[in-house]
Length: 112
Image (cartoon, rainbow, N blue to C red; front, top):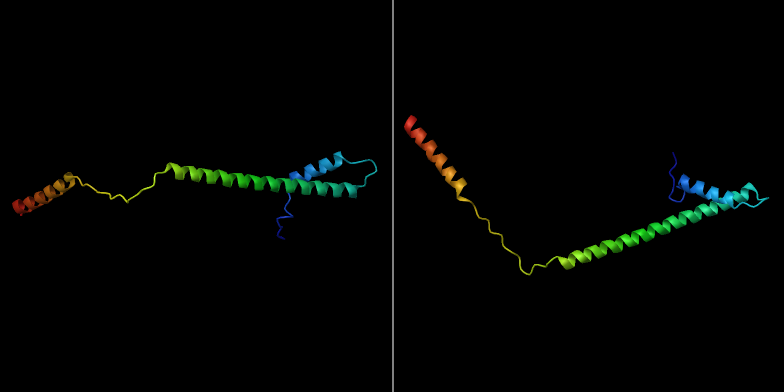
């Protein structure tokens, strides 16, 4: 199967549109060859328009993302000094651990 390049990959929809428009503006006495050439020109124009719109959409999307980034930068407070995090452990787990060891020790002392 041969690979198709980007310029050869044309959607069937744009081909149909170009053909419909070319037949719509066809003059009496115009040959099929001329109509085909006109349809190809219209199809190229449609593809160019689509590419142009995609480029505009990409640029607008980039500007929107940049504005969003700028807005988040302005609203996010900057940290002047790194904050230290102090973890505070609760006394209950340590108490239960000590109690269980005392219980195990008492069991071995009393029952062995």
